[in-house]
Image (cartoon, rainbow, N blue to C red; front, side, top):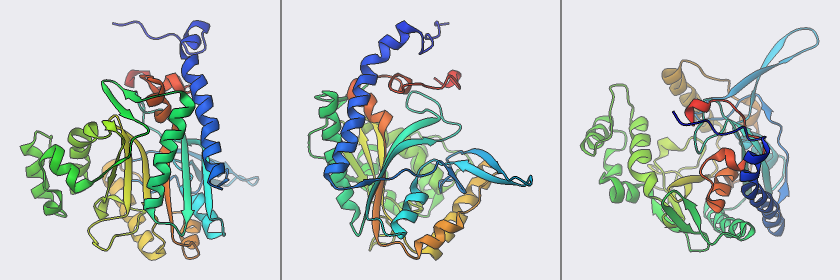
Length: 347
């Protein structure tokens, strides 16, 4: 059995991490300089929320507010500041960003930490393509701040200054998995046969979305963002619970950013129809109950705010992962100032 790495706070272990952390500090300054140049306002969303988010597969940290008279009200540490920031858009803010900590339970590994730093920003009255331009600019700015000529992860590398590759999900499935994704939309058995044909494990209770995620993670994602960063776009509508639909109603205004096979960001043309949003949130929680046996409440204040929210686009980017790629760090703990010593078996 290999010897466990020394505690991060021991002087020699911290010294090994210090170059990564110094680069992180410079990159953090560059984040705020980038958004200041774009005339954004930095907002500080509360970490405690009535609902942790809208993704059935994200496990939250749960707590409770104890009122003076003894009653308890459940609260959650946010997995993203999204709901709070959309309320600010409804209140009249137009260009806002948040740079802070978010929390996701049951996640630990080389790229996952239960508390991590997220950059999230919104542009009111702007198409989601504008945020793709932001992503390109931010990658270049942060690479310069780190003194990095290339992003590196394992054997993969990507030029942070190169023009982004734009690739639809359907094109990526065809190119890297040999699957005609659009031909299988809504047809679980057809996608199951395609998955089995390419060696992706299928189990009886896999739904269409489960199979989509398996093929994406096993066959497609590792191939994305090599030599230059990739924007994976035009997601199936079923895989974008918070996004507007395109003119082709099978597809949503959703994109993800990849470099070196690592997912960095997730963006949307935001849904502003409260009735449709409620339907999707209910469906997500029903799916979570089916898969995990629990669910969380819907944020009614968020749904009320959607009636007043202007058309907008938003994106969230994992800062720690970007620091890893810019510095060559192999584990996320190396780029976090005070990582948690939990879940060590998963590392």
